[in-house]
Length: 154
Length: 245
Image 1: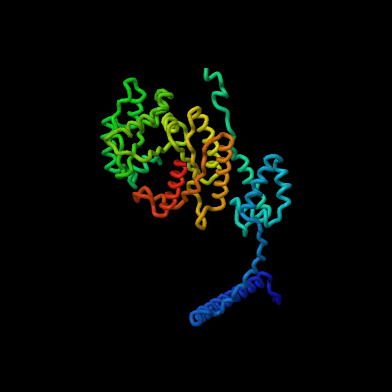
Image 2: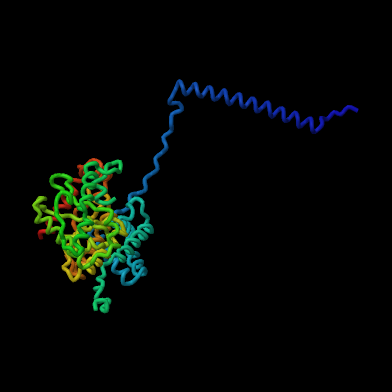
């Protein structure tokens, strides 16, 4: 008896052939499009016109501190003195009183970063580092060697 | 690089022929700084003639007593510390009275950061100690240390004037960067503490030597690069003003 329905395996082969044909057509179309585009660019170098990227809007300028470098230096010395006497909690308490622009300006003044790149937190960390350095840079008069070891002198 | 190397080496690292010939002659005659120390600390008296076999002429105006390798082992040789203290004073006296060399205006000594018998002798006689400080934490940290050590080592003899200046300051817009300025302000604070707490005569000279690439050409081009002339003039003015205050 003759089977009027194609076998599943035959059906699969037919679908696979159709896919191959379709792929070849697409490749031919794609290469034709590529050729056309290359010719077009050779003839019209500015085609298609480049679309300008809209510039990102600048962040609104930060408010600059009104304090002078001398005032900032005085603030730094005061901060170092407070930290020397009251530790990091005294430092944190004093720094919390400062406006963002002042602590950033202070950080810049002591050479820790620039205005445009500093966040409040980074500025506080920078000032803290400088305060710690300043605390370690002290002149302490040592006792004379002979006073320290009187027996040596005998 | 030591000062002697900086002055006497070619750009390829070999000794200048003129210096190397002079150095050979000087060593053969026993006219080195080390031999002078040996003579000074020996038992036969300080019989050591001064001439151009001991002093090398760099130019007509700048003359130089080079270091020698033996000096590296100075601390291991048994020299009398107390006797060594007067060595530089006496050799300067010999140079001053010698008719073989001209009258000198200034004598500059390049000392290591550590104390040696020779630097002890220099510090006991010099009019001014010049301390260069780089703009970084550890260099600045060295300032109170050296001021303290100077005092401990030199006392009871009078402590010379001490001048501090910033070396290799980072330049920015005709001045120093904020970071260099910060470290310089810390140096000033430490020196002011040393002056008030220990009675040292310390002065911070506002005459920085900037960190510029051209300094690397100073040795090979045989002179101070043009960019540094005003820096060094300012520094020298600060030094002499302080010296004659």
